[in-house]
Image 1 (tube, rainbow, N blue to C red):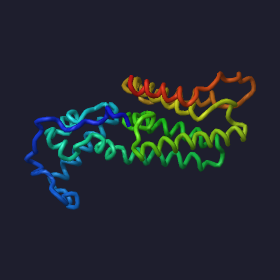
Image 2 (image 1 turned 135 degrees about the vertical axis):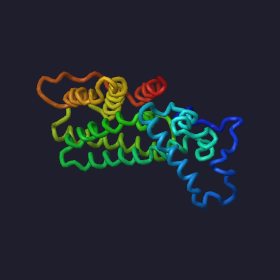
Image 3 (image 1 turned 90 degrees about the vertical axis):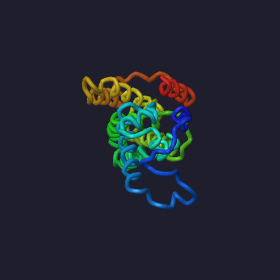
Image 4 (image 1 turned 30 degrees about the horizontal axis):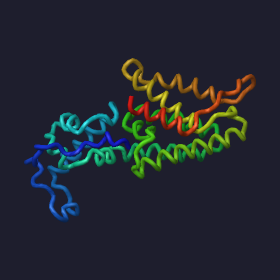
Length: 238
């Protein structure tokens, strides 16, 4: 994940009296006190809401304000932002992987491909934090890297099968599927207040464009992996 996502401890942030003194040797083996556990839950809930609605550009100070806690409390529970990101996105990442598994298990590849697009788009458009990690080319966290690899491999295998079954037009690549996810997530982000489900109409139009059929023009040359990665970095840093 992009190193800009990490917020380090801030100078002058001291212990929070609601939490007590910092953890000593072996403290990780002891359960949190009830007040500390409640604070942790409030932090995770606040971060989940902010990351989902605004993406991972949200800082820990904003999380603290949204949770109604002091900044010191947040840094005590989550001294590194990446630890908080991992805690918040564990379940959404699991859901995204489950969609990929279900899609690949479809009897007909076209059904699996459309399921991957529709269910994957629903998850990514509902959670901008998930979108930021799933579609960014950067970062080497094992869970996120594995998810990206899984999605790419599932897309490639589904496309091979769908072409063999005569359902997908020639020339469509797995990288095209990734680009479609970017397009849909951008539309969903900017249409959320006007019409939250607007992306579904364009998902239908884009999916129809993948279909094989008479009179289809030959597609122009696909992007290569280096070009896709460069576009993705520019998109992530927009």
